[in-house]
Image (cartoon, rainbow, N blue to C red; front, side, top):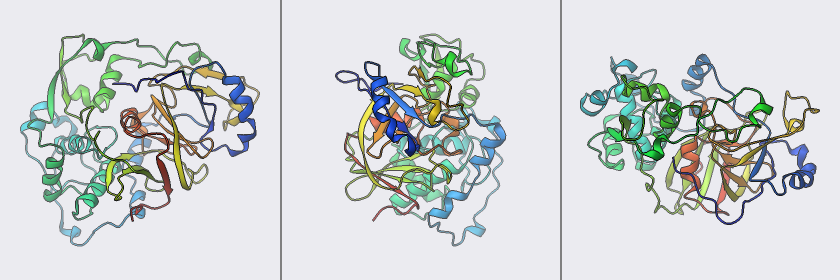
Length: 400
């Protein structure tokens, strides 16, 4: 994974991010405390890991459909038996097997994985690529159909699949061999403790294993990458070894697009990058605030972009934490609460950032900030500039 490089001297950010407006008066003290330290972000929550049962409930939650206008005419007869399972996934089945269409609902397997890889390449991110259909894939399909003038069903039908293949560049193989480089396998790898103050003593909140790093590098879940490489110990591979990986978007994908503004749906749980004509350029599933800790509303802008941020842990702005506990500074890394990049917003205390738990994106809520997978956050940060307008909307039809 390529990190955005720092330009000039280190930027110091001292924010009471993600929703604690009552703490605004403390900003001067925070700035003073952070002076002379590296990039520091204060947030009012951190990523909570979800159980498999919670992830499954979030994956199939249909609530996002309430903010869009699904084209449902005729769908009652639009069904097919899909016999595929996750265990059917292999490099060969993805590249040469049959495509089952239409695709929707509680399904999994090679056809779902093909759809997710194509969406990633078409810059309509499904979030984590895992071979399981869910609302993040459905949302990406819906908004791709909307942009391309297709029936907005959220289901992958034949017309949508054919157009998706074209936009994704018509790859001959969606799973390809990757000969690992020194950079691919480089550490360090660390064991990350549960206790905050022990985390603060680490030099970095790095990946815990090469398996975890390789999964993020290719936008997948570790389980999916292992399924594609059944006889490989992904934590023991070395430079020169070859593994099978999804052929995800390139580092240069979409770089020439003119992003005029960002539109964030608080109820739809996604971020859109739009051009001057309000055409969707990029789509990302996201985690946003809840009704208890809502995300902002109205028009704002990105004020700064900070790679590799430190996390300023402040008990006095955190729920369920004793205010008398001391502050701590947690080092940067992909397992930092704000991930690998922070995009500060003009409304005090809020930002768009990465995550230490990519599998939870879109399936849980934050205390108001906007979380993306690390790879989506880095992709977006590398394609926008300071000052770009950001609009928060309640619904989903944000384009004029």
